[in-house]
Amino acid sequence: MTRLHFGNVEELDEPIYASTTSSRHGLATVEIQTTDEPLYRAFFTELAHLSDRPIAS
Image (cartoon, rainbow, N blue to C red; front, top):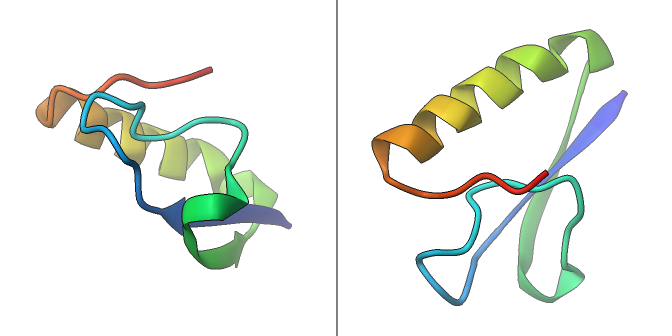
């Protein structure tokens, strides 16, 4: 299982997703099958591109 952490950012130019999280702004955590992780990464990468947001590694 892989955990996805969802939360808020303070600045709109912050990455839309990253490999590390800050518990300071966490709103929810969802567990997904590790085999599904590439699908989620592809979705959030496309979302970042469409919204002109960076992606952190």
